[in-house]
Image (tube, rainbow, N blue to C red; front, side, top):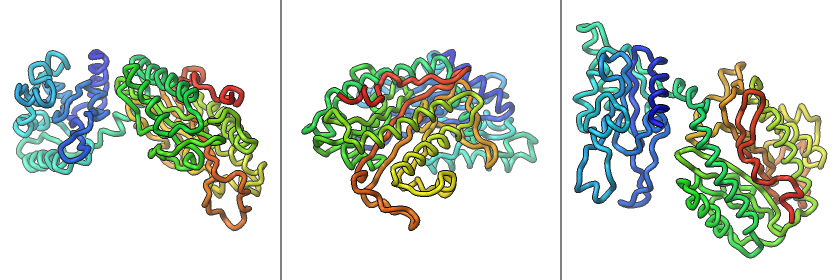
Amino acid sequence: MQAEYRQRREQLMAKISNGTAIFRSAPMAVMHNDVEYAYRQDSDFFYLTGFNEPQAVAVLAPHHAEHRFVLFVQPKDREKEVWTGYRCGVDAAKEIYGADEAYPITELDEKLPQYLEKADRIYYHLGRDRSFNDQILGHYQRLLQTYPKRGTGPIAIEDTGPILSSMRLIKSEAELELMRQAAAIAIEAHNHAREFAAPGRYEYEIQAEIEHIFRLRGGMGPAYPSIVASGVNACVLHYIENVRQIQDGDLLLIDAGCAYGYYNSDITRTFPVGGKFTPEQKTLYEIVLEAQKQAIAQVQPGNTFKSVHDTAVRVLTEGLVELGILKGEIDKLIEEEKYKPYYMHRTSHWLGLDVHDVGVYQHGEDKPQILQPGQILTVEPGLYIVPDTKLAEDQPETDPRWVGIGIRIEDDVLVTSNGHEVLTAGVPKEVDEVER
């Protein structure tokens, strides 16, 4: 992978020309008091370096005569390493990660100016750490003050996000291999969960089985808090308490993905725990399934990202009208978003190093994002008949027989050169496959 990290850095440096880009590692996150979560590197930092330690800074300075890639890291410290784990250290940062130069992180303020003073701008994403933001802004202000004496130095700060996001949006073969593995593990976990689930079990039991497989197969764990929602809990989009006892006749919505090698999968399936859909459950399920199939068919190079959502919305709205849950002319209902009490989220998001991965969805009001080979997006329509849904005055009261049903079906879809590939097709979703 080091060759790939190097290639990414070279690609970014070609884009920033005479600028200097600065990236900071993710901080340690505190679970409670002095107990920390397992460390997870900042995605941009990892994408460019593969370096997986906190308290580090990466500098890319393509204009520098000798040091185009510089790492500032924690030095080796035997006493601290006994407590918190081994550190790469300064020397190995060059040997293992290919840095042209490496320094202890304590020398950042001293060494950083030499990589900024001949740059025409600083590329840096203002993050949540105000003190580090101030540190970078302080360097920028000092260089501005001395600019008249030297005639060189950064005269602007530009966010790294737009440049790096466009790079991360197109997945390399190495990235695709990791994402296929993340999908394969999640497929196994979902299929096991469907067999394991039964009336009388608790949602957290299903969660435990799923996440056991994630770790057993070498994954880092859940890509996000697993959603195991039975009955009316499925109408809560981000339900993660997972404490209810599953009842006979319930639908069970499982939204769970695996993180593998820092890359993620994201799958949702909804199925009848008792083995058979009720007529109402089956009717709504078939509408959502048809919406997903037609939306996935829109995942083609040259189509717009927006077309995936628009297609799902139309199928769902048509289904709601056919059932009498909505009334009115389809185009007007869509224009006025009358479907939103029952379908309140978007159909897709990018997927990669982050579950909601970077990359724009729209280039201004009239320039939708065009789908290109190498992009991966989720396709996840749903219907949620929430008990206390508030409707417009021109819409009928919802028939109680639909109330409390929540359904979502989600797959991870790769845009290919001539169409698409559903990476998560190994989890059944046809009615006769999920019933038993």
